[in-house]
Amino acid sequence: MKKAFITGITGQDGAYLAKLLIEKGYEVHGGVRRISQPILSRLEWLGVEKDVHLHEFDLAEINNIHRVVRETEVDEFYNLAAQSFVGSSWNLPVYAGDVNGLGVVRILDCLRTLAPQTRFYQASTSEMFGLVQEVPQSETTRLYPRSPYGVAKVYGHYITTNYRESFGLHASSGILFNHESPLRGKEFVTRKITMSLAKIARGADAPLELGNMDARRDWGFAGDYVKGMWQMLQQEAADDYVLATGVTTTIRDFVSYAAQTLNMDLEWSGSGIDETATERKTGKTVVVINEKFYRPAEVDLLIGDSSKAAKKLGWKATVEVRELAEMMAKSDYDAIT
Image (cartoon, rainbow, N blue to C red; front, side, top):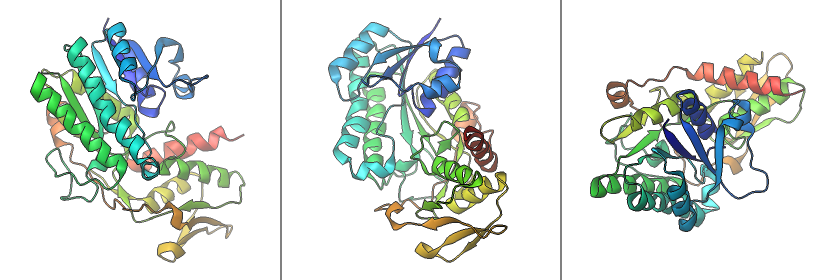
C-alpha cells in the first residue's frame, strides 16, 4: 500500500485528491493547521473523512514539517496548502510570501534531508502568468505575476525546479489554471456567483456584487485536475505541466451560465462600474458592480495550453465551463432550505 501526504487536505483540491488516492488504495495522511475543530466538511461531502489520517501541520514552522516528514514516511507528498485567495494577498503580502514561497522550500529541504526518495508535487498556478506575455500560456511562457500571491507562487515554482535539478528529487510542479467545484471556497468568485444567484432564485433581494466583468479565465473542474496531479508523480522523470481546458470565459458569461441553470433570463446593460444585470421576467436587479472588488493590478486574460500534459500524461479536462457553472449552481440551490 502506497502512502501519501496532502497539505491543505481540507480544501477543495485536497479533498478531491484524498478521495482519488483512497480509491486507488493509498493510505492517505493530511496536514491541518492547529485549530480546535478542523473543518472537515469537504471530506465529509465526499464521504472520506474517516479514511484519512490528520496531522497538525504548518507551512511556516520548519520543526513541525521536519517531524511530520520523519514520522509519516510517505511515498508521495502533495503540497496544496497556501494562502490561497489572491485578493487577500495584498493585505497579507508578507504572510503570502512566507507560506506560498518559503513554505515550499521548507518542505523540499526536509525531504532532501530525510526522505529523498519521496515524490513531491507543488501546486503552482496560472496566476504566475499575470500580465500574460503570450496567448495561450504554456510551460515555457515567461512569468509576470500581478499580485503578492502570484509572486510568492513563482518562488515556490522555481525552488521546486531548483531542488529537482540540484539534488535529484522527483519534484514536479503543476501549473493549474482555475479549477472549481461545489466545494470551492465561498470567497472565490465562481462560488460567490453561484451561491448568490441560488439565494436570489430562492427569494433573496440583495443583488450580487462583482468587480471586473471583462476578466477572462480558463475554468475547469477540480476533480479532473487532481487526477493530473497524481499522474505527474507516476512518471519516471519529474517535470512541470500546465493543466487547463484551453477555453477562456468572461466573468459575465459565467454569471449567465449559472443564472440560466436557475431559470433566470438576464439582461445586461451599462458598462464599467455602471454595468448591471436585470432579470427580464421580474425586473429585479441581480448583478451590480462594486469598485472594491477590482484588483489593484488586474489579470485580464488567462488561457492555458495543456498539450504537454495531454501528450505525456494522457490528461484532459472532461467538464466544460457551462457544465461546471450548472453543477455549482444546482448544488448551491439544493443546499438552501
